[in-house]
Image (cartoon, rainbow, N blue to C red; front, top):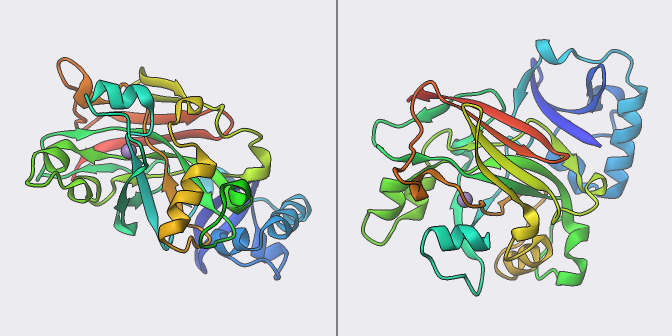
Length: 286
Ligand code: MN
């Protein structure tokens, strides 16, 4: 089951995706909430009802006439994992982490597929990072690893845009400063429900900059896979439906290149994950 969230006169609406377009789920089945995170909170029952409503809906909304929002426009939390691909840790001369390295983004960073990444005047070193994003379904605290996959609502492509001069060259290495400029977290275009992703640790993940492949790896390279991240994070915080977990980026980032590559106005960045779609965003001066 694939979902999008679109802007309507009634606010954001979760839609099911089918070949002829988008079906407003709440409009077809009033028992379904209008927000995607609330549908994910219903677990397998919500996915089943949403799937039925998508098939039953009469008129689909043409994608060309719809304004996409981030699939989850209103998460309670955006947790990010640093250095979670073995060879990316190596390319940045960082030790292989023995536990997940956590940082965060905020909702100001979220933008949809097609919306521009804004280059802040305050940074000269804005970099790209392709990432698999886990979306929490049913929440929980102290979730055992063996039950962790039951708490995943779905997956989507994400882009962890990073101002390296702020992230690495400030006193104390201020990752949050470098990662939270407005528009620094594109996600989408769609969310694919977990039941439609048989193995999230076997997905090809690529990033193209102006058509040139800059990152090309597989989620099989994750040091801490999906279940471990859910279990680890839920030891610290209660995970809520719709929480986003950015799982880290593979090798090939701009700062590790010689010479380094920084995003510039006019660039187009694409994050492609097998089975989950392609997230495309232009880059403009902010
Ligand atoms: Mn990252």
